[in-house]
Image (cartoon, rainbow, N blue to C red; front, side, top):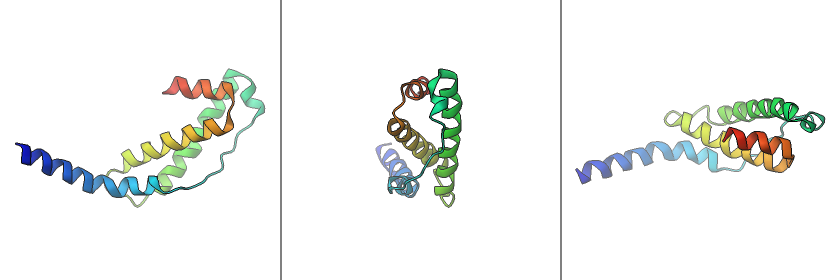
Length: 102
């Protein structure tokens, strides 16, 4: 039983490693948003949706060639990149929307 678990863990590591290799490389992206929209919670929610879509599209493009574990890699990339974008924009309304999503 132990050997089976070890074999399964090694197989998963072998499959997942290429998927996460692309997410560990540093890439930069610019997101478009309206700072004026961030002045209200409703505007921040709308901007968050737009920023999230931009990030998701970029992460999907970055992992287009990944065959195994693509969904996990895209989710990891999206979560990490979206979090970084929200922190860099540093708006309280946008941060509150992001916190409510997680």
